Length: 191
Image 1: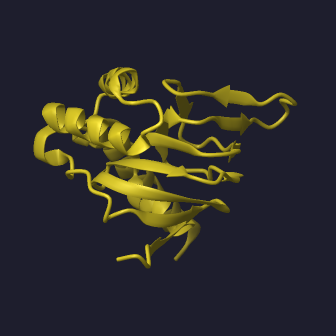
Image 2: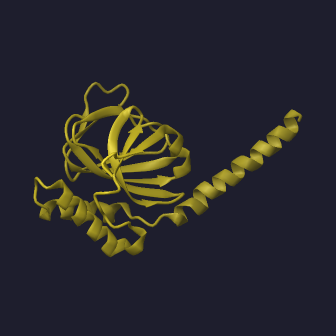
Image 3: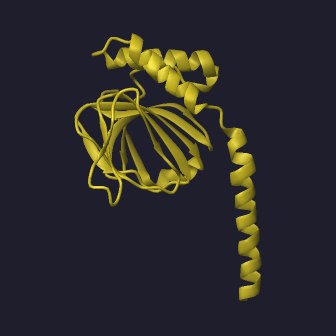
C-alpha cells in the first residue's frame, strides 16, 4: 500500500473515531457525576461510621432508586480481586457497559500503584479511608478523604496510594474495553 492510500485510510479511521467519541459515546452515558456525589455524601452521613458493608448497601440501594435495573443488587458474594497498575484491591461491579462502569473498589490493608492511561474519565468517590495521589513534578501529595471526589481525566496518569483501609465508588466513562488489557481479576476462593 502506498503512503497516499495509507493516509486516506488513516484519515477515515480518525474521522470515524472522532465522530463516535464526540457525538455517539456521550449519548450512551447513564450516570450523572453530581447525582453520584450526592448519593455518596448522603450515604456517608447516615451509615454507621465503622460499618463499611452497611455503607455499601446504603449506596447501592440509593443507586437502584435512581438508576433502577441498571444497577446490580449489592451482595457480598460477587466481590473479586483486581490487579490494575500494580495496585491490588477488590471490587464489586454494579454496572458495566461499553461506555461506563460503576464499581466499589478498595482494600482492607492498603495498596499502591499507578492509574494507567485510559480513554475514559475516572471519578473516584472516597467512601472510607484516604487515597493519596502524586502528580509528576509535584513534591506534595493530594489527599482525598471520605466524601471527596478524585477526577482523573482521560489521557492522564498518576501514582496513587491507599495507605490503609480505603474504599471508593468508582465511575469510568469512555471507551471501557480499552481499559481491560491493564486489569487482571481473580474471584475469591471463599465461594
